[in-house]
Length: 341
Image 1 (cartoon, helix red, strand yellow):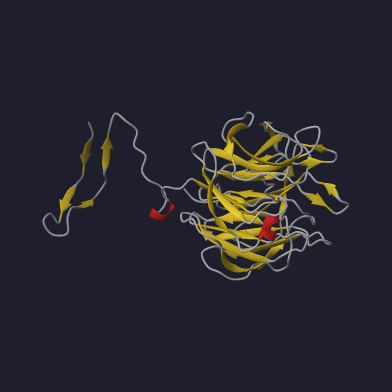
Image 2: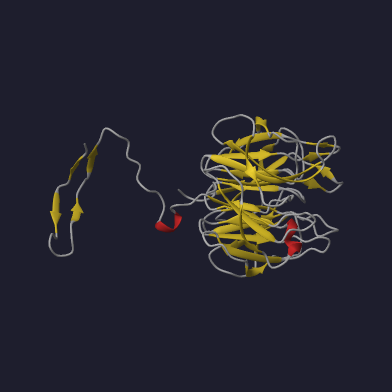
């Protein structure tokens, strides 16, 4: 039984009850009030956008809090966005760049709650693929990438709720492609990738999303690697898989986003994979698709794996995608760590 006590109730019979003064709630059970505005409630959808097999035009989605196979969502405007990178607010998902063999600079978007094809958003400052992404509720960042000849250290941003071309934000600590992004509502983090040489890097850098400026050093991964995946809740970042010639990695690292320092071992994916897409809710990190090399079952995969973010441990089976694909980070969600509760 619960007892609700208020100082006064006015307006009965006219505009309805109006509560004034302190409100006390006594109950034998816990009460958790809804968080966020009404557009942010009922979230939990993960988006799988594009991929490479050799280039996938379709999109799929999953319910992150459950387990099971993905469901068809719609199509992107071009299959060459197979190496594109995705980010999202609580209502809109955007995917930018990509292309094989020719690179593209297009940015497209969908409304996450409504299955449909993509709509044009604008353009990146340069045509390139394999960028790292992170986002807050307001702003999305694209970092690094490769145009077929050159490595980029560029960071640029978009305002997710509008449409238009990306604007310059600053620079990463080094030119890199295959870098992966994650973040909290205030901080964006970029980890790993391939630097000129080419050579896999263990560098982790960070920026303040609401400002502009160059990335600062955060720390190092446990293993230098490229073609990895990254995602987060509000406090902890999860970085998984990747490639260090000649071996495919199954390692999972974690970091505390609000601090700085080197990554810590979390556990292992149940498959040795790279080019994995990643998405998250407040409690769960999900990794979709991948590519495997010998001596494992070589080729593109439709596997979906997950782990519980606040614990440590190995990846578990979630379900399967509709098609095999290597994601190149074309995955995001409406409830990841960059969004306010």
